[in-house]
Length: 297
Figure 1 (cartoon, helix red, strand yellow):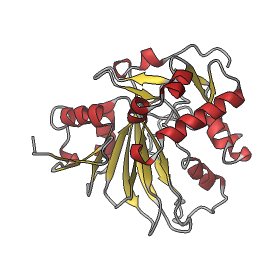
Figure 2: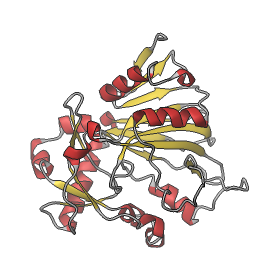
Figure 3: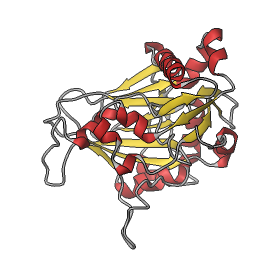
Figure 4: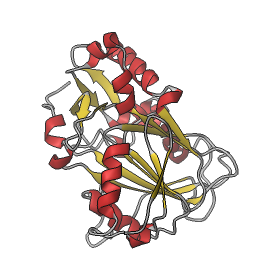
């Protein structure tokens, strides 16, 4: 096992890990240490890696089943394609600012956790940079674990013990009505999760929020929106946030159960390409304890 050095990303959460080459990770070597750091610190940064697609996918698979939102659209025999977060078209040009593809990228500027709208949400996102713009295009993380621990009692009482409903098209509608009507954002029924996720490894609790959240049990839509906005605003105060400015080769991964994230704008005429693989949660990650009945909201 190589010698690791850990440097806090913020006083509240996250560490930068140096002294490791992610290409050397296997199930028995290095990964157990990475998984333990993941549970403890919620976000890990590895700079200057040369992570190829095969190893990227292999490491994601060690966390859990690889998420595949296009499985129902893939033709028989068609291989899984690693997702890209990019404004670069296949011909090398960049998408226009008001193009629906770019608008979808802009919806990622809303604070969210990935895949809360899926029947099985994401455990981790492993993100690495291939092309970075001259300015902007950062990824920001917010610890909902640290925020929950600091949440004022009156605000905590309004959400604790309640369920929250999540819908993919809801976050897209905040950006564009046309975008929200696309079939890809309406494939899954509304999902119903507890508002607080307890980590089964260490017992630490975190708010489970996303831009996809639209209704809180016991409140109407207006009251829910106001409460969700207040909770997101609290969780995204500077003391709970880490902003990562990308360099090619950086790898950033985080616990979707305890961290929200968002992208930030960049000059859209400039290419930006991040490679993203999410792994899904399992019962051992707390899935069963989080699930609530999904009768009509």
